[in-house]
Image (cartoon, rainbow, N blue to C red; front, side, top):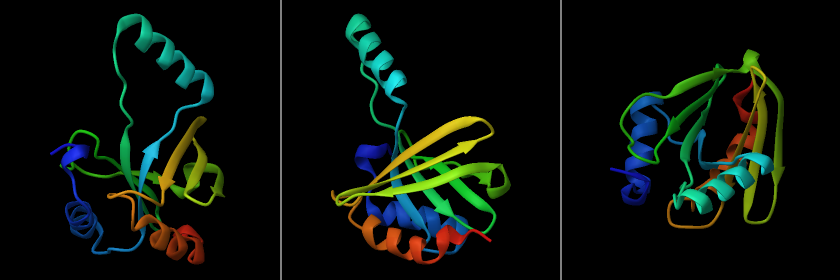
Length: 138
């Protein structure tokens, strides 16, 4: 199933199946840089294409950040981004969402974790847990 057809139980079950845990993850939307977003918008208008948001599960462990895209399917494995490869890890919390920024081997990564919406309703509580645990970094 794709992102539009996933539900919270299916996502939580995927995390539990992979990590035997139901707390240390956030459901996020991957953000592009402003320049990249503008370029995509321009190209989508020229070529009449649509680039939908890409949705990810981010699971935080002592080993690093595990990433799994669920935009098209929840099947497949998580990819590990080890903490020793993460630089400039930064969180920006706002009222209705939080932004997660870091560099991974020279590539800027940016994710938005909304706190509202059907799929994102558990993010606020999970964010607090992760924040209190310092994102499970050693």
